[in-house]
Amino acid sequence: MPDRFDLIIFDNDGVLVDSEWHANGILADLLCEAGLPSTRESCIAEYMGSSMKLVREMAEGRLGRPLPADLEDRYHERLFETFRTQLTAIPGVGAALDRIATPTCVASSGTHERIRLALTTTGLLPRFHGRIFSAQDVARGKPEPDLFLHAAKTLGIRPERCAVIEDSPLGVDAANRAGMTAFGFARMMPAARLRAASGGIFSAMDELPNLLRRP
Image 1: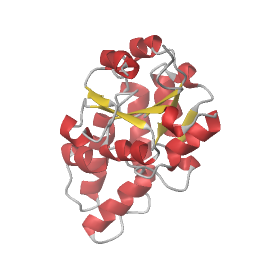
Image 2 (image 1 turned 90 degrees about the horizontal axis):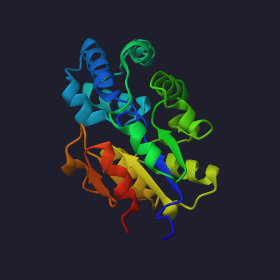
Image 3 (image 1 turned 90 degrees about the vertical axis):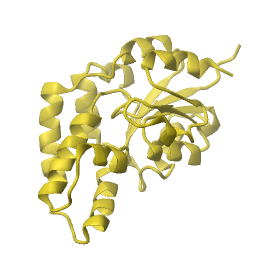
Image 4 (image 1 turned 60 degrees about the horizontal axis):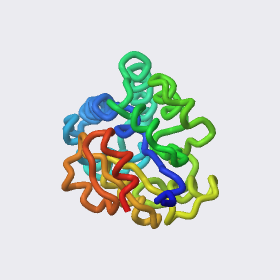
């Protein structure tokens, strides 16, 4: 039986690396310092899957005034130190990747520096060398389809032959707009918020290889 897909596109944060708990805690602290009451849980619900550019736009809309100009620099400084000392891979992701024969890549809202550090720290970088795409590469980040379409075009794969593994509604929306099949990883995000994932929803990485093979 021919493969169902020609390319599997993985989000990074929360899908390959267990970073969302750390990242959203740091973001909540910085937003509170700027005068916008926030918790780790509220940041996960409202901003998870967004680029920092989009986070700034949404947060400033709620705050009613500009955030500090150095917020992104302070965010990344704290985040990268946490990544170097505490970051781990998502449980079971290495074994799942071993069972997936289809070519893979990473397409993330994070910066290239963030993606590389996360994958290096967790030992996953060799699995995706030369096939890493960032929101920095395109004009519009998720939920626009630009990043996923850029990844597919660069690797020479038609959108309809791509599967996207995402853990946020924004990412699922971006995959759908790109004409790709989205699979929702409901580990931190409630499954109901990923219901637009046309390929299905799963909560543990060992479920993914079989889900990708279903007709």
